[in-house]
Length: 289
Image 1 (cartoon, rainbow, N blue to C red):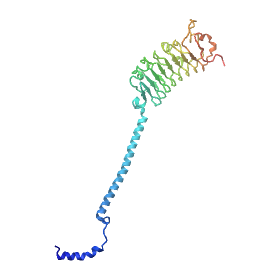
Image 2: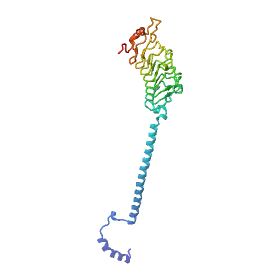
Image 3: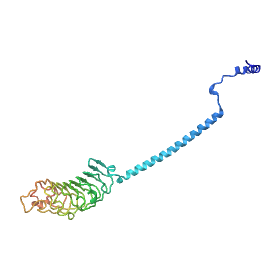
Image 4: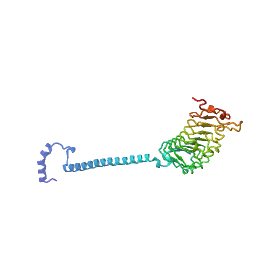
């Protein structure tokens, strides 16, 4: 039961309770709390912005480092393992236009090497001594000036060798099973070719020595030879024994299909007995212009 003082207090508050508008929940604010929250939100926003900026800087630095590392990897391909800097497929190595200055180390059991259009200057004995399975080497379009004499000695299975478009002045010892040898577009002179350089190459079918500085046709060409390219040299004379045997009128080169002597100063018509053993005449000038 309410006491008298409480009743009196209620009576005095009634007019105010009826006249005051209803209070909406969302209009109640605690400004101290609000200011505290606002300060915390601002602080968090500032920290977030700072972290974002720092993150961008860190990210840029990371990507910059990665770009620099990638560029270094690209520019240093000569230091990479061969099958990363080149292409290795089923016993074949393609290492072309990579600016290499030396023969790359090869995977074991390599059979075919294509290292064309690089900057290789020298071939040493060590370059191929550990790869007896090699059958084809193509070093076209390099800067090769020197080949050590026994550089190809251990390549007992080598069948094709191209040294075209280099700076050679001499021919090294060649493997005995060689079937094709290309040394076009070099600076080779006749005196730099040994007398028996091709004599023991009983499988040699294709010999390309065009665009050199030869003064004569190489001696002791093997019977197996089918195609001989000597165009655009300095050959001025030939003899009855150049292709045939002057002491054997029945001798015939049965496998020789093509001889090119065009672009040389020799007048072939002056040496009719030089072609009696051939099935086809050499290509070249037969009359003085």
